[in-house]
Length: 482
Image 1 (cartoon, rainbow, N blue to C red):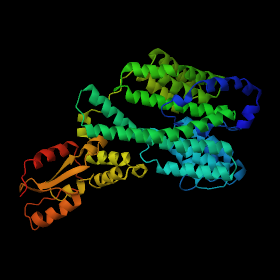
Image 2: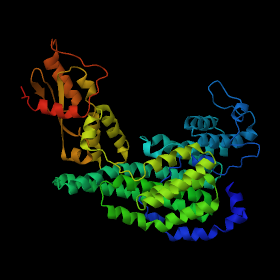
Image 3: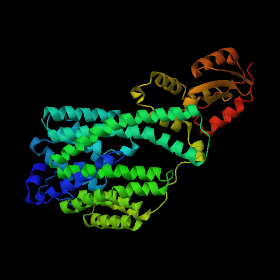
């Protein structure tokens, strides 16, 4: 438990590091984050001597249900055994079994600290960078906040509050990055930008920044509160993931932004980075140290390739020493791909990707549309999303073609379905416009498709590449309105 760590004599020497942390302007980080992999499952463990991580018969000694989920008959041992299993599965790099373990405990829905740990484990074992819908995670955070208040557990309350703000913050940053990258690319290529598009970009940026500031302010207040309460261990883990989001952003923006800007950002936080590594080494916790070598190695890789490699090698050596398969794989991969340039998706990559994949990406991009304050923009986006998927109409006949003419707002939002639409038949050379797709389709089908002998329905599996959108645009522009 954290209290025991603080009471320990060794913890006294960490008190001087608290002031060092607070001297650094941690609020200057662009986006605080928690991407704990599964480390939080390993916090505050007290594995008894009879449980060895190399024990081959431990799992076999536990009773299992038909579904393979563990049944615990002795509630006194639940916390001890479940924590051990989480650590064991993490070390074995078996994320599936680890997740099953988390959900098995969570579904017991006991009103105690075990339930808080299960919620936290589910959150932290999910890869934040691949989450498409934050709503289930926000619900878990709210559940954790309510349960923490009920159990009068301030530390868990702070952590779940941190998580809630983090997920909102990360979803906002995913909105902000495409706008930023689009502007930078347009400036580099000296592409003229419509004044209305510039206005929309600026408006979006201001709105997102306002929301980000509010969320990040609360997030950083919670992080500082954890530090003020001398929860060094928890603070260090959270701070590591503040650093990780910096690494993520630096790698994402590197192909688009001048290297000197990235370098300046990295150098600005070096004192804090070095302090985190120093404290991690003092704590002598293997999991925290491995996570530190991995994340901080990634941070240094953009600034000093040899320093990054040095930390990866240290991490790999430690991971092999304790046979930690998860970290062995991570460090080995990073070393073998050291210094590789990140190649962003270019327009040809997007053209060759499937239409359904792009539709899904755009839906996810606007899944928090209700947070948009401007009602006119909100309504326009909703109308655009309604016409986003042409596949259900295109499957009606292989001669059916649809063209999108995005408005300036649609261009600025990168939402191709926001604007004018046309629908027609490439075989009969007829089309109808404008209107929403459903109305256009119903009108066209009634007027031109009834008893049509030429109709050839497409397969239900029809899912062309995005290039097909361009091809239909060219085809429909050759058709005159009857």
